[in-house]
View (tube, one colour):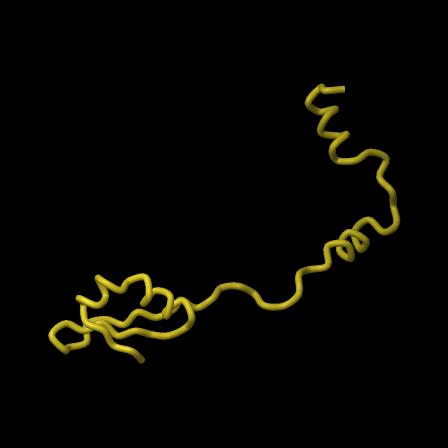
Length: 81
């Protein structure tokens, strides 16, 4: 873990944030005493493939073809036709 003093933090903030974004933790020191640690946030993203929406729709509706599209239904509701 890299350690920096407050002066370096003020003058090199961009470079330090880039290192943190790449996964490195940085210890902040005042008068050579550690006061804080900056570290990257844990990712909340789910890794893996996207859901198969077409498969879900087929499970709900089967091979049924709806008589009107959603756009047509909305247009009728709004009185545009």
